[in-house]
Picture 1: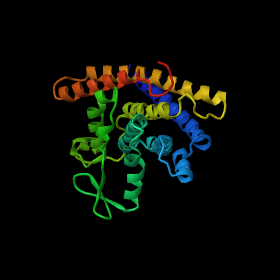
Picture 2: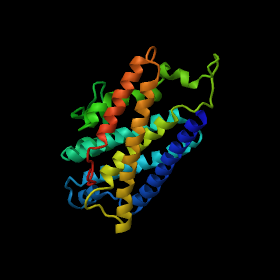
Picture 3: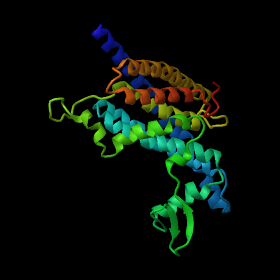
Picture 4: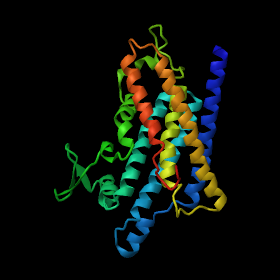
Amino acid sequence: MERRKMGRLEERKKEMNSLIHSFIYQSKKFTWYACFDYGFKTYFISGKKTAEFTYDYDYFNFVKSTKMLMSIRELLKKNHNEDVFILIRSMFESYLSTRYFSENNDKIDEFIFNPTMMALAYYNITTDGTLINRDKEEVGKLINPAGFKMGKDKKYYNDFYAFLCMFAHANYGVANLYTDGKGGYDLTRENYPIIVRLFTIFVFTKIFEHVVTVDGEDFIDVRTEKICYELVRKSIALQEELFDDVIEAYSKVEQDFYQFRNKRMIKMLNNMKKSLKEELGSLKK
């Protein structure tokens, strides 16, 4: 029985590894033939700040997320799953901000020009998140990721972001993942082998769906367009199965010491699964 369980676990890992590989392959192609700074092109020609800047921001975050996915693939090979959660958090922030800006395309300064001026040190930031220019004038406010959540993302955001932050910060609550169970520490443990891949696919599929599978996108050919849409469908179908499996697993864990953690995880996982039904691009669900 144990061998059968382990065999199924390995098959699931292989399925998700294959899906990650397919996403990387198609995303690298998309970066090459579709990603371009349309907003800045118009701005340099006419001096006008247009809604085309949402395309620039989409492509920036998509390419950034693709590069992170490539890094995640290498970390998974080494079983450095805790570090993958750190990258998932960054990717999740990219998705949230991209979706928010697309639906609030009047906030060009907040998403494009203010961050650029901050990076060049023309703007500074105060402790309360206010942006100040070199003439000591207030020019804007910093928006935290919590301010970007929309739609069904609101239902799971708090629990999911808190889970990811445990790995990004020096949080002793995850110290047990680095121990050998005998009072010492261990650098070789493989933690959350299914969940880390599921969460990777969950977040990347959302940004891929939002940016790539959109009517009017400039695909290199019809075949590639069909492949990209089918890739999202395949990912969502696999995720729905896996969320059910993981929820069932948490439901079967002893409900004494871990009862509150399990309850929180089950709620989060259910809300994440429900969010898969939300249309983020042009894929009909």
